[in-house]
Length: 76
Ligand SMILES: [Zn+2]
Ligand SMILES: [Zn+2]
Image (cartoon, rainbow, N blue to C red; front, side, top):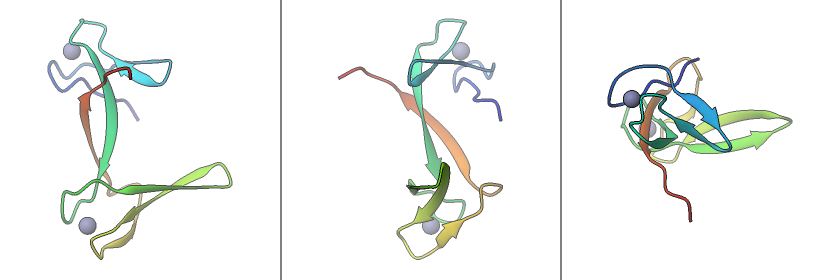
């Protein structure tokens, strides 16, 4: 799945832990949202796979239903 820049909609490159827009719109991190409540999902890593879990009562969310959003990435 491509990560699309929230500014220009073009696919972004993966650069050392974050996404980078080649058109210089900056660096972004990907956030998985629950399709039912639009809240960030908790990522549960198990056996090399990642499952996404809604803490607002929607339970495990199928990867097909997850909505992704991007927020500016800042190095800390
Ligand atoms: Zn861009
Ligand atoms: Zn939810």
